[in-house]
Length: 103
Image (cartoon, rainbow, N blue to C red; front, side, top):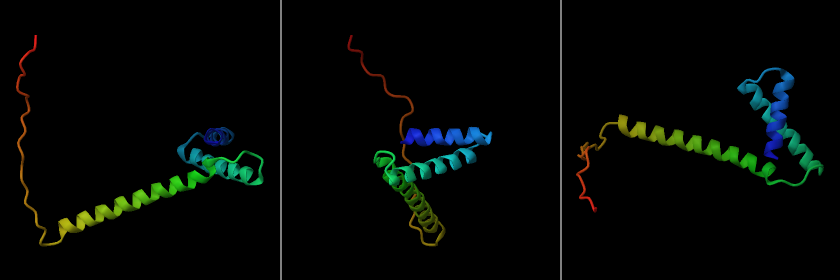
């Protein structure tokens, strides 16, 4: 079903005569709606793609939201007074020590 969705998006761009990213995304959304309608009408086989795609989009937006919240929390901790910061440096050798040869 995903390949059908991509094919519908490419055909949409071809019919529009413009292969831009926005046009491809619009064709992808249009293709998903067409496949959703065809699946609900029983004209195509039941595919997990139709059920999983909205969940994948929801997971993406959940991740972006949590990433934004985490960055705001870190910025708040750094910018408020009384941040208990003890910066330290560690040392690691840049050149490894030579190892003895076995042969």
